[in-house]
Length: 131
Image 1 (cartoon, one colour):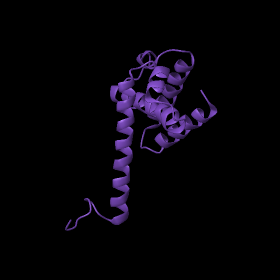
Image 2: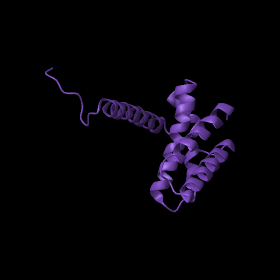
Image 3: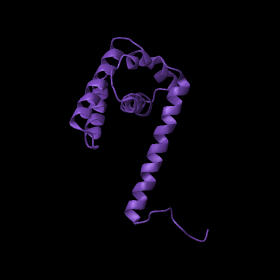
């Protein structure tokens, strides 16, 4: 994958490091992302690579897998304007799964925007008015 992709992965790892993960979790996260990337680079499918990941905490494993999928979508679909079908083909997964993750990403951005608005305006709920 491209050097820009490596920067995207490194940025995401840096972002995740700012979450309150333990030192052990950070190490597992970084190693897992690297293993997925290496597996993908070797030509394996996304699900095949992810099935080989050994992470004891199943929810944490799911977070790692979701992050990698979203990083890939961000890089290939949003940055490089490849179709969701092209991304799915590269990952060797159904296009519907990429489309679903893409929609989830957009929802997360929307929610982050709403939260930022509420924080900035000092409101806990949405705007009120007589409309």
